[in-house]
Image (tube, rainbow, N blue to C red; front, side, top):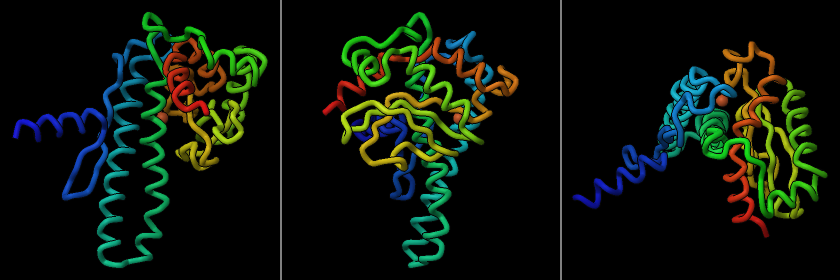
Length: 225
Ligand SMILES: [Fe+2]
């Protein structure tokens, strides 16, 4: 009994749970307080973004997975096909935001500190300098039409760093199975409209002050071929 309670708590913390035999997902805790990224990102935006937007993706993802299970059990192929877009959109929203929170850190905890070690060297090799990479990510993020994400990724096949964008909530894997996300920046309006009055380039200029390069470095070192 005690083991079951411990296991359940562990699964909830990791964002995974079970409902009627179906694996479900839950909103992961943020590794910092909502106001801890100010002034780069306001506490109000962080709270809304996490509690409302990310929660909605999780809720709708679980709903779609439950409907999928029902459709499969009934052999309803049309319903299975119809659910694919909701699963991609909401599942992608959950995957992307779960990465995004880890890509940010309060300044006293290293937010904005430049990458050290092998990631720092790889950035210099593939982009010329960290400043050049920041410029490229910011420019591509600002130019992305509509809503989406801009990514710094490791391409495990090409063995190099690349900058990619995805539309809507498409996760990075939709651009290539060999791409590992190191850093994803949310360029949906909901990520900045309250604070930056819809001026996406201003948001993209300031977010670098709280980027958690330590996390990106850890992923890079783990995934480097
Ligand atoms: Fe978002």
